[in-house]
Image 1 (tube, rainbow, N blue to C red):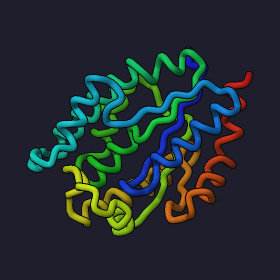
Image 2: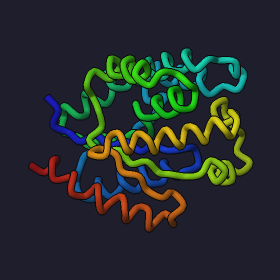
Image 3: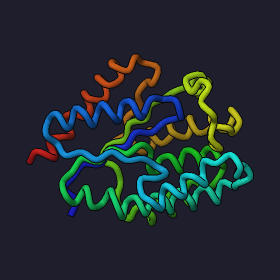
Image 4: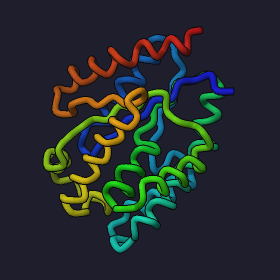
Length: 210
C-alpha cells in the first residue's frame, strides 16, 4: 500500500534541480515530514555502478538503446530498494530525475520510439509513478553557461542539437501529462523559483498529514 508522496524534478543539466530539491526537503522537514531525497541514475549500489558507466566519456559510442536499458535497470533497482519502501512507510520521496528523463533523452533526444521507451520503463517502475513532476525549463545554451568549467560527462558532451531535442521532449511531456507535470522557468532567481514550486507543492503535503 502506498501512503507516501512521490515528487520528481526534471530538466536539462544546469537547470538548478539540486538546489530546489534541497530546499523542498528542508522545508518539508521543518514541517515534521519524514523526507528522502535520491537521484537518477543511481541511488543504490547497483544504480551507482550503472551511473558510472552511463556518464563516463570513454563510452561515447554507447547507443540510445543501450542507454535506455541501462537507465531502466538503474530505475527498477531504485524503486525496489528505496522509493517503494519509503512510500509504503508514508514518507515524502523527492527524486532528481525519473522516468520522464528517459522519454526526453532516449526518445526525443536519441530518436527511440516513444512507446517503446515508455513500455520498458513502465515495467521497470511497476506502477510507481510520481504524484507531481516539476520541469525546470532552460535553454540548453544557458545550461552550458551555468555548468561553467565543470568537466562535462558523456551525456553533456552530446551536440547542442541533441539537448535542444531533449528540451522539446520535456515540454511535450508536459502537454501529454498536464495533471502531473508543471513547467517552471529555470532562469528565475532561485528564491522566486522555489516560491512558485512551494505554492504548488504545499497543498500536496496534506496527503501526508491525514
